[in-house]
Amino acid sequence: MSVTFDGVVTESLAKQIAEQIREAILDGRLKVDERLPTEMDLAERFEVSRPTVREALKRLAAQNLIRSRRGPTGGTFVNRPSIADASRALTESATLLVSLGEFSLTDIAEARDALQRSCARLAATRRTPDHLGRMAAEIAVQRDPALSGEAFCASDVRFHRALVDAARNPVLGFVMGSVIEALQPASNMVIDRFRDRTQAADQHQKLLDAVTAGNPDAAEDAVAALIATLKAQYARAQDAWESRHG
Image 1 (cartoon, one colour):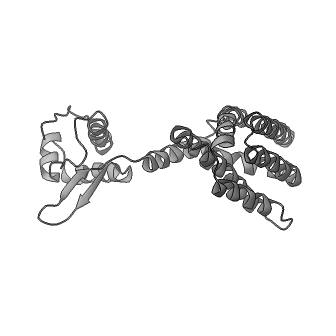
Image 2 (cartoon, rainbow, N blue to C red):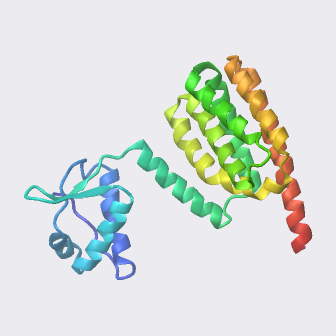
Image 3 (cartoon, rainbow, N blue to C red):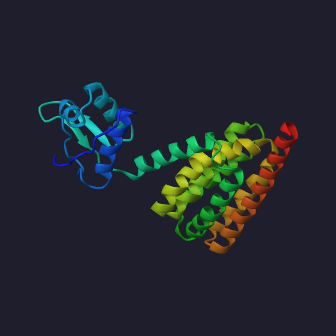
């Protein structure tokens, strides 16, 4: 391995080492399937202990950037990135930011509005029977009056995941994955007690009907109506919170 690394300071050594190796992977200095030096070699290069190197490698493995293989030809190798791995990392980051309050409900609604309009238009011309069947199945679930709030929210997420999948655009699917899997559940739980489930299921049905009919304009209009309802529910939730804590 001809890659050189900068010296590191004493604070968070493992994190800094992991970041340097990560950057070498992302900018192509370390190639896919290339073997990394041994723990001992890396410890010498970075002038740190082997446990520190081991911790750095654990960080990289957790990001699925490297893999270990045992045996005579074993060692630690650079992984080939995948969309699924990158999407999972993005979702985890978004989930953390939501938990820290970095995104407001308005921010989430605006993002959903912009992205889901595009998804709906594409889905209207690219959907398959499987996509339509998944969306219809979730609407049937949502019409169950005995459904818990948590189960309804989970069904809502699955419905919109099916819509995104129906757009069949990998970039939108990648971005919307984090919006749906991280941001949507958080906002769903906030507004659950203000939600009219019958109205929600009816709006989902209108969206499904437009997608089924292959009508992009109607599909976009259905998303716009759905988001307008969500924004009104967000406002009610915010007012209720302020009245309790104001």
